[in-house]
Image 1 (cartoon, rainbow, N blue to C red):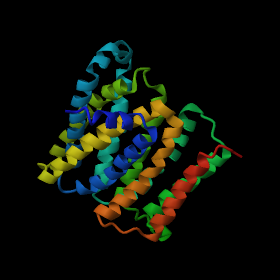
Image 2: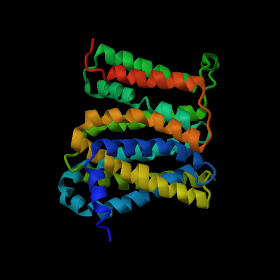
Image 3: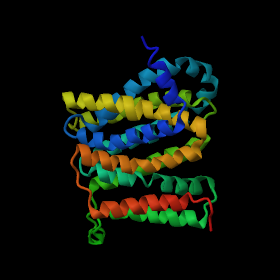
Image 4: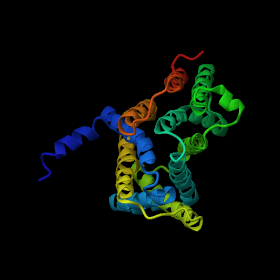
Length: 304
């Protein structure tokens, strides 16, 4: 029954560029879905349930690999717990909280500063050499983030009235950048096994946050739309995109694959306009140019 589908699946799985475009489309769509989740499912319950689903699926897929590589993983349990909490629970919960008070377009643009933040983190934590052109590129990208947060009005900055949601997604982006930098020290196991080992950590830490949400009286039973949001989040940005990205890195390397993350704000902006009817303002265009232009400068091979 599945024989006609199998060549299609194999074709997709062997095409790194198609995998990366699909991955960034899922990540861009995540910004829009986080807005759709508002009022339909609470932030901590969405984070908790998505990682419980993913952890269960990954154990079914990679359970044998986890048992095989357990001697390597066991001494690094604290690291795995910290990474799952930092990159998965922390980032996603802040993303869903931010969606209550900012737009999907803003979320996408601020998220696009992540490559610049990863450069800074690698420099601070590991002393990675950063060229002058990379510093300039990072500065330009961060100006784009500031333009987004200030909505193009720098009087807003002077009055210190930046949107709370923009601050939350910026903190979330910093957390995920830290997670990305710390991947340098990950255990030497296959990518899917490593992901499967972190998913339970994300599920456990998100249960704690769910408990806090319940105690604060902010939990509510998801609506039918909330369950649909959970289904999308668990299958696409949580599971398939991670598998696709790991496979693409295997095929063409992390450096070339990382360039495709620059498509995220384009997808998130397009989806937000199409699905949420959000308006693209002139300052959004200026911020996109600054963020993407800064990243291109930072990744330019001929440094100064």
